[in-house]
Image 1 (cartoon, rainbow, N blue to C red):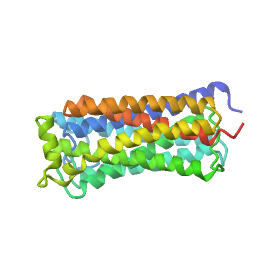
Image 2: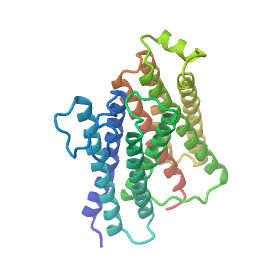
Image 3: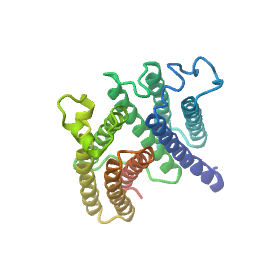
Length: 309
């Protein structure tokens, strides 16, 4: 029989894995924004053909440290998977979320390796790079979602039930799709800023509307537009679902937090744009995006488990 102490330890470890992966994600943003993605050349798993780089440049240190932290994240998720299977019986929902988490930490590593091996790093722009970045973003979000669900189950969260009215499932799915669209447009906007930096806001806007600009420059206006529309949609969506759940306290709490995060993100995003996206602002912007996604996942989980006692 599992003791309360062991359960507490497991839950703490589960949330630690979530937090550590967030750190790795943010370090990946710094890696991209600092144009250090080619710090190890087009080599993977090695760095410039060496297991441990000798006399490395600063960008090599940044890239290599990202690989180290990514490796730690991989083994942390593997440890979570093993511990979950040792702790919970066959058929437990947490086993399924832990397995999916491990699958997506593997694909996360594969996408990262693909970016390096194909040379889609630093300030290199290929036709395929926007698609690589979009795929990377979606994989990261799915990984984060299942890690959060695993941590939620480890903390005593009730099992999700999809036996609800179809309109709720459709509404939640639209919310997921909208967040992914904002994420994809954001990755394109970040790439365009890095490849084609502007000295002033006016210069940047002129590039956005110039018919001779690269396509990713002309597409980056989609990000603020989709972000605002999605933010408004999420606030109304979660507010509506709170009413549909008869004011359930847990659902209401996540809805209120999501609304606060959305408002903060819109203000922060505007400030990032006005300041021409310095690295520290990009880090904060992505952290808030991840926080919104995590909050939405927990909101959806609370709503889908509300009928079980």
